[in-house]
Image 1 (cartoon, rainbow, N blue to C red):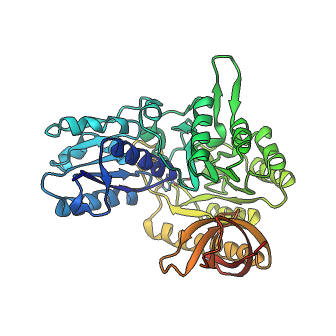
Image 2 (image 1 turned 180 degrees about the vertical axis):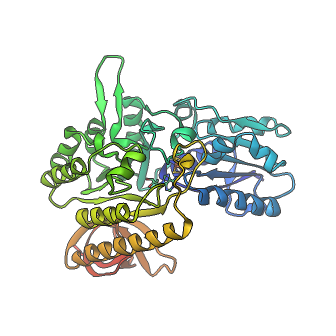
Length: 434
Ligand code: 5AD
Ligand code: SF4
């Protein structure tokens, strides 16, 4: 009987992608994937360290794994918590077999060869893993393609530069190869990924420099690819060639994730995000002139050290002004290896919770308004599959809203859907039959 692996992924899309590549690799070693912990011969937790809550989730999941697993199953952590915890993870959980950082997944087979050793590798070696991990045989309809690793921006709250290292852009031809592979094996939508995705910059040996706009143009040439997007963008890296893409390239979705994090100038300075609010607003205006129907989403952090009530109100004001849709907001969480964790004026948990509730309620209201404004419109949507009941299909609109339609077997993977109803969380619609 084939040996089995179990993998659970936490965190961002980059981790989801890494999880898929790890699964593809284990399959080449003859393993089958299982959803049952107690059945698995190797158990991998693919972890996120961005907030303390995410890290805690990993250690409680490890407790569950230890109770449920077969006695001789190998188990370990990979990803950002592995990088952050390093060898201390073995002290905390002595029977752990491996700890591999976000750029060392391809070393996993070493534990299969030497199951009695402890495998630790948290080097930030760069791009080696992309070459060594096998491609997926079949691509999901939405293919996430990392185009860079790490981040050079060094926001003072963020652990990513520590866990994923300095920013490295992948060679242009490698990304194009992966994009073509995804298109030929089932992808309809490409989402280029990077912590600072619009900062993508690769200079080939010929001396030619490629930017994200070049990758978008290459992907758009592929007839299988109908939708293109990218995440996550840093405001000041939004160059004119990229803004121009929103005008020129209809396959590029009219939706952009460009986190502002805070609307208060002094908080942004302390976050080491040195851009003027006016500059951010100018970029949004330029994007709107390029593509009048564009919508922006953001991430927000509330309760950053030193955030006054007035500063928080400035965040509320910018959220109202830009009318962000599909946004995420978080309570500031002090992280190891970050400058903000050492700042003296930390905000009490109760105030953070209060501010988060206020901001969430505003963002939900804006989202509901936007969703309601979609009623009566027809949008070309991508099918994600049936919902839990099987009675409905879940589609994604160009703005990443979830749209529920009745499941009748004639439905296509890409369909024009007229929106009939909306609430804060999702839309309802009907397929327009051609
Ligand atoms: N505390 C709270 N939120 C954080 N993020 C990153 N680091 C922290 C932190 N220390 C949020 C940012 C980022 C998103 C991925 O996570 O908003 O955009
Ligand atoms: Fe989490 Fe950041 Fe690592 Fe992604 S890169 S898994 S968000 S800590």
